Length: 216
Ligand code: SF4
Image (cartoon, rainbow, N blue to C red; front, side, top):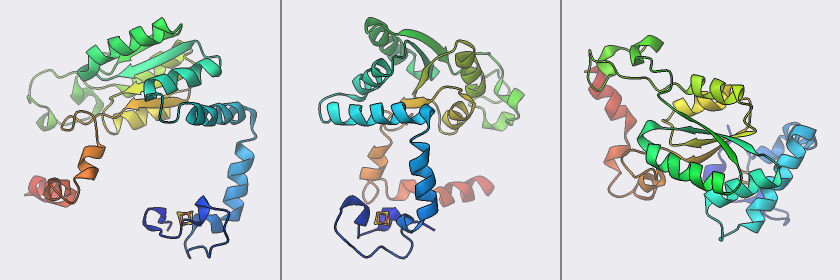
């Protein structure tokens, strides 16, 4: 099992000869060769080069919104998909305006599109906020299919729920970038909990406890 997150060697960040940790991914030469070959494939080559250029050009200067637009512009994309959460409708409109002002066509689809009840995809009534009442489901597969049908060249995710975002990524034909990750508690800044993991959030980051409470 790889554990770069706990590595103190960081041989990958230098040209200095350093002894690799026993479970260092750099020992996986075959996989590394495969990965490097993938960058040479036409569908990845220009995309990767451009993304890396943007990283350099915008370093410490451009907010992510601008980096996203610069990437799309340089790749010659005109039509962008925007898959957004209903809770971020206002932000989606502002983003849409910014993208359009910069010459992009924007196909935007809200998560509730389809208007299907949450239970229609198999969820139990008890997990609704108001059991027994109609609650529209988030429908990331429908969002992806709609964006695919409009031939979006790249899709932007704005605040989709954890896991719903995963399905959007899975079903999107175009590559997807995430502008913002939803966190209803931390103003869409999930790292807030990480920064406080040894402090105020220490007790609140225990998923085992949640499961036990649910099971009891
Ligand atoms: S790739 Fe190897 S050297 Fe780099 S962080 Fe991971 S374990 Fe450490």
